[in-house]
Image (cartoon, rainbow, N blue to C red):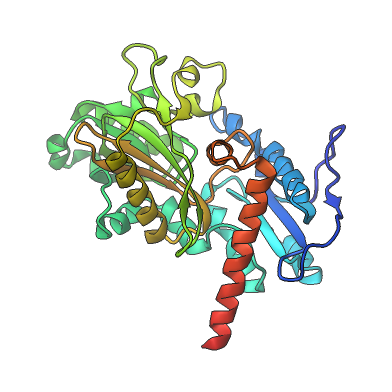
Length: 372
């Protein structure tokens, strides 16, 4: 299934032509987003995916406001033949890739960039290898550790037999449990922070059965949680103003984590208890450590054009990477847009900037390929 959705009143038409941009920039930008949320959904996955189309429309409007010819198309999967045929018949100058899953599976997030690479069509954001690495959290951690980036020690629990490993009794508790191949806080709840081996075994077994994928058990890092938004590529990578999670309104006794409910359920008490705010008091040394850590993580995992790195700062001022999001939410109220606004960058300027950064990268890559 592919195609634009019916337009609400006052919405931007799915194709809007504006005066052409200069010759050294793309003119026609096609935004592609996933419509697999129209399929039958579990109660847990319904809250976040309902906003996918609204975010895609907002990005498309911003592309047009930035001076490009803007189009929007949705794709569901698993059959992507119609999308490939369309791209072959009428390739855009640039694809703005907003696909975060296909056929209801987040692990298929890498399919669209892989197809675009095969077709030779420039696109925004990370390539399939970077997405694949970040979706396999254990591999991402191994790469980060190899580059000297602190990330919480972990174990992977892939089968019920793994729960019997006596080494689990010697882990540094508390631990945070989460599915190993998900993002958007899927599978993370208040009960995900466990304080002993029996609690770990019980909760990990529930996650394994529910999500049908390995469970990542990592040391829970107590401290401030910072969201680090980045724009650019090697040589021009820039950190936008930092935000941190304000846990002051979190109900007493709840762990200070951004659970699924905290991220997506606006009526939930944990949503009110996890408010992103501009970074408060922090020393220049701490800010420098956070910037350097986020940049190293971005480059180590092969992110491109934009991204977000989530960091915990412990009592000793050490910065621990707890998540790297290579194709993060770019909707107007999400973290990157908040950081850009704090930096004096309106939403349309942010989206236009992403297009320009991606285009320069793709042109540079093509020139390098020709030189070889």
